[in-house]
Amino acid sequence: MATVGEIAWVLGVVAWYVIRYPFERRAKRVRVVSGRRSPSDMIGLAAALFGLGILPGIYVATGFPKGADYPATVWAIVLGTIAFLAALWVFRISHKELGRNWSITLEIREQHKLISTGPYALVRHPMYTSFLLMGVGQAFLLSNWVAGLAGLVGFAVLFFLRVDKEERMMMENFGARYQAYMERTKRLVPYLY
Ligand code: SAH
Image (cartoon, rainbow, N blue to C red; front, side, top):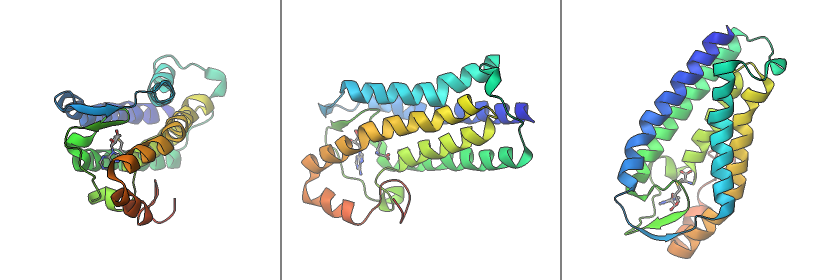
């Protein structure tokens, strides 16, 4: 059963990259007007990459750290698969909606538009919502306390190092429009937070 979860996780990560790749390529062609590639943001990105990719990848490939394994169950795999599929869906629709305004770090691009439609009508950070869902999926799919929970930790480090700065940057650029947008949306979870 544990192997089924591991295979589902690997397929999920591959699908994640298939969704992301075209946006990475396109992003290179849109000029950046102002960037905030700060050390703290680089730490956040590294933490997310490590927790959601490298550490679980090592676990799936080698079984390390074995001592933290616990028995897998069918319902955990089912829940994990549902959470991961939801993550991929939210990831894809938010990439499509953000389009050329997307950046891996905090940047304002040439002719940057404030997006407030699609998933952005409900929450200000749907892409981070998808990382959160991915972390939940990983926690259920990998029956290992360390490799399973690493994704949620990595997500939390990236999110909390970044979110205030991102909203401040958007506020400086879009002023009252972003203020109004903030007043009618939540950050991550529709109607809740
Ligand atoms: N936090 C958003 C976007 C992540 S990508 C999400 O989770 O969905 C990060 C880049 O998106 C930032 O550099 C910023 O320029 C841009 N961005 C964030 N919110 C935006 C919005 N509502 N409209 C347009 N661009 C936005």
